[in-house]
Image (cartoon, rainbow, N blue to C red; front, side, top):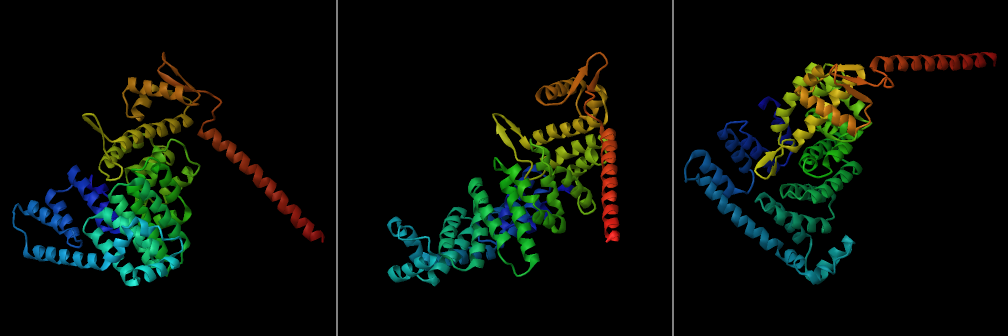
Length: 437
């Protein structure tokens, strides 16, 4: 399933630290040779300050206890730089660790800067040192310390560009610590800034939206309310345009969210049109499943795609999250997806046919006869579906008060014809009135 792995498309839009969880997942799923994953990790680590981690991976990759001299030298350099930054930021860090002193801070940044300068001899140089120290801590993998210092820095920073950079860093740190509630707050704060501020060019703003959507995947597929919120974000015109222009692969995650969402969204029909528009630039089994059901009414094709969808979900770092239940490991999103996918097939199939053979339906739903019968009985009991099962003939009978697709099409055509006739009449009346004048 490596052909459906989106990591090569997603990784360039992430901070390099956020790529590590994706590589860990791919390594666990054994989608690529172990050696390839370890080399990718070392390449990422070489541009961070996580030298000890890089040394450990080098030992695993080359089965040796020796490490290259440049790694040893790099470690000495990192430790020295960390100590120097710690000393530069010490006056402000000590102030922030003094609870009584912090009480003197107010919501007014200008007042705070003046107060820090007058009473504690802390000026722009020490505030800049705090930013550099926080950034260095992040690069060393100390995400907790980095998040705290970046938060404090933003409370004192008056440079909007630097403040935005610190917010991106804070968001990354919260994601890496899996603090999903706080990460969601930072994500919304960042979205507000991206949507409201002036960028040097429109493309710069679009790029920020694309980064935001990629980073948001970590949150939305881990947060309790994430699957609703991903629709709210990705389906906004500005963000959907960014997806269609620069990141069509993100359609996979929006499609999945629509499918697993319990509540049908009014935007769903419009989204199907987006899938049709983007099928030349991006498609995978999940988008093709929706095309089979809602565009082509190809239920045999939908059944085949459903099996492929299961594999795609299991091998996707965001969709394939596992949950431990006792001695068992499950993938909750996979189960929800398959259940709702069957419902999509069933609902659409029932709109077209008024009497359905149970054996045929079982085949379309990818279930055996008994499972299909049980599934449909539960569906009829739990929903407003006007249908009954005729056990003797082995069929599902839809109640006649539900017009099928062809009847609906005729009704819509009649209504359209009537509206057109009325519109032409109004135009003629208006034209005649103009002539009379």
